Amino acid sequence: MRSIDLLIKNAEELITLQGTNHARKKEEMNELGIIKQGMLAIDDGKIVDVGSDLNYDAKKIIDASGKIVIPGFVDPHTHLVFGGTREFELDWKLHGLTYMDIKRKGGGIDYTVTHTRDASFNSLYQQGNKRLDTMLSYGTTTCEAKSGYGLNFESEKRILDVQNKLNKDHKVDIISTFLGAHSIPKEMNDEDYVDLVINEMIPMAKTHAKFCDVFCEQGFFTIDQSRRILEAGKKAGLVPKIHADELIDTNGGLLAAEIGAISAEHLLKTNEESMRKMAEKNVIGVMLPGTPFSLMMNEYAPARKMIDKGVPIALATDLNPNCYVENMQFMMQLGCFNMKLTPAEALTASTFNAACAIDQQEWIGSLDVGKQADVLLLDVSNYQMIPYHFGINHVSTVIKKGEIVRSNKK
Ligand code: NIG
Ligand code: FE
Image 1: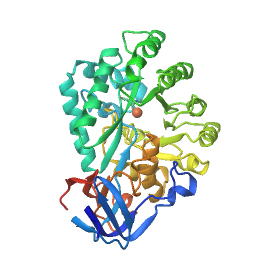
Image 2 (image 1 turned 90 degrees about the vertical axis):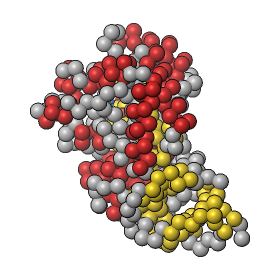
Image 3 (image 1 turned 180 degrees about the horizontal axis):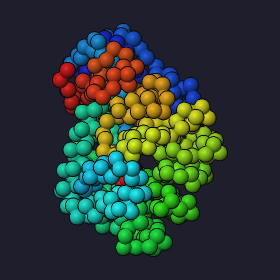
Image 4 (image 1 turned 45 degrees about the vertical axis):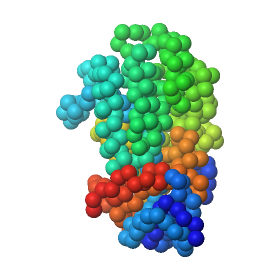
């Protein structure tokens, strides 16, 4: 009998997400590839077998009776590294101030930029490290992280350096995105800053990040500026992503399709033509329901409509000082209760499609032979329980690259 490192057995549901190697669309999002009383064989950090009747001589056996087993959550949109927090904005929001009101009052991104620029490498590292610990305990095994609170060469580089060091040191894998075009720094005008991003920051970022992102929104970067930045990033080998159509519709979804972005995020106000083009070009719509929730907007992105039109959908936390959350289970809950996703769609959006949104589906996002053994045990008897029983952490064990890295007492 073959000897292996780890065998998981008796899972009430082993949710494999097997089936496609492209981001799932429409009805595919409901197909979870469930094996009842499932077993998973892991060796040397990788999945070596998946089924219901496996025979191995395992060094360690986990009995998953009463539990479900799923791929590790992937959080494909975070602003992980920032200095300072903005809890004082909560009172302002309660008094009816909008995101733009808060920006004008001295809060928002500018406030965080000041605190991030002032923070040392070590302080940013420690703060990011703590957030990653929280993510891991809630089952996130890979995340994307964006720069964007530096807004000058030195601080943007420092944030990317912090992310890359955290990626080496922490169990959670981090895929880096350069978001120099997050806002226009107070000391510069917009066109000069766009030039700085294109001519100086992108040449630095190409060796520090995989993606290039832009906050394309009124008061931030125009469609034309966003296009120039993303084109320059593309030339340098950075794959485009875009924060689009969050507060007003600027045809950001259309630009995402035109430029060949891997994903477009937020999309609360996106028009139908943009959705159609995104579906045609397979641009993944990354839904960030934590943001309208934290802004008390009572309005969410039209995820249901996008799925029906064939846009592949992922979920992400958008972890940032305006939306301070590390928990992907909560995103599934918001996705179901506020965007009318089915529990199966929300789970696909938080695992396989999320992996696709950061181009990692070859290694993670499903329980397939040959993939990295990033696996969760959840203390529920079926996957519908994840959104249904909300507000608690269902994760009991986190396995990263075949190693048990978290056991939450249940
Ligand atoms: O994704 N939209 C731009 N950036 C963040 C928020 C940044 C902030 O308010 O600090 C977001 O929502
Ligand atoms: Fe964001």
